[in-house]
Image: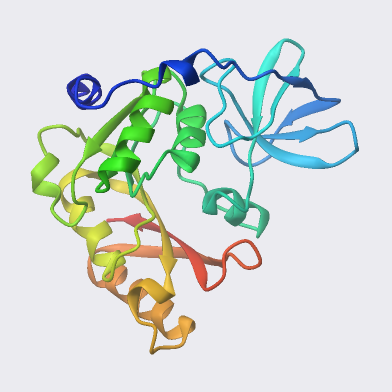
Length: 257
């Protein structure tokens, strides 16, 4: 099931210079587990600020220039909500994160791995993240800069609108995270759920209103996407707006029945 990582190693050359650049971790004053979400932490930095973070599965490596910190011998990555919609949703009061340690997650629209790498940290060594991305340049960056250092991630160069095309590469998953700049975002998620999501599994859909219909008010777009999920067998649990981190975006969390 995890062959995509191996098959792509020969397709794109590895960035050896980047592999030689190890991030230097600063020291945090305190790090505590998030009270509600396993695998996510609150880090208190030297200036007194409190930042979301995840335990770094690839020691010494950062992904998008994020700060590395150490506390009691453990390395963490500071999680930037302006670069990650999942982090933004947590800071905006999200109550349910259906991405847990040891889970298998299908990530649609993984791009170069900013949020997907934090998901990798959360699910840990016994979990797995199947990363579907359509853009060749993004999948190259994802492979060379992220997946090669994280055995629990499989990059898959494919179109998320055609899940049958990678059905032999992905096993059943407990969660789907969807962040794609496409019309019919909810339909794409639901089509993938029909093939890969276990009954009772969860989805997180980052809805980008302007990618769906620029002529409609964002609230109308969100309502329509939520309705698609309901018709396709999901129960919508919460909808969280992501401003000021992302304009005209919401995160919809749903359970699949």
